Image (cartoon, rainbow, N blue to C red):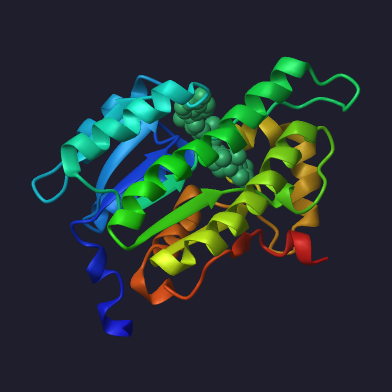
Length: 253
Ligand SMILES: NC(=O)c1ccc[n+]([C@@H]2O[C@H](COP(=O)([O-])OP(=O)(O)OC[C@H]3O[C@@H](n4cnc5c(N)ncnc54)[C@H](O)[C@@H]3O)[C@@H](O)[C@H]2O)c1
């Protein structure tokens, strides 16, 4: 341990969802830098450009255009990974959406799509991928949740519900899969400077929010990628069912 930190990850195979931009893109970049092969799942065409940029002689980066609201599409994407590599060592459920409105105005379709992308897709993906991990006697699943999964944020009803659900789901997968040497953890960031972060916290709302964060700033995607990398390392093999909150102290007050 210690001096060999991370080295055992070389040659592993990971799926990262929401990899076309933001936190998912930063995680993909970190993994490739650490010689982990990556499959990038995203709805956006940009994911092909990201994969092309990351692919190199040491490791591959392949994009699979996937709509995470479509169960069949998810299953086909996982199957195509398994047909290529025969195994999946790491799954990072990172894709997410947010719709902001008062509880009395939030539309049913906004609720449905939030739950589909933020909660149901991680469930289906973890189910599919864990079958391969069980057969291989090991694996790591990381769910990108949010501070919104542990506290209330105004106008975030569906988002808070989806992320609280994801933290609960993380714990159940963790206890059931521990005996197969599979660790399942969540990471809950505060506001991170990405498209989604800017959408939710633009202007005055953001200025007010920063004042409430003891560290006095928002986070960067790379800070979340580093935490993911620690949790998928062998050094973190005893950590499972945890929700690592990365929020500059916002939720301890
Ligand atoms: N940015 C923040 O402030 C913040 C804070 C806490 C948690 N998070 C969580 O981190 C994760 C990543 O957020 P981000 O800020 O990088 O967001 P982002 O909007 O920059 O990127 C999200 C990615 O998910 C993809 N995606 C959305 N719906 C999809 C679908 N149906 N099928 C396939 N892909 C889909 C998008 O195309 C996009 O590439 C999300 O789960 C988010 O809830 C973000």
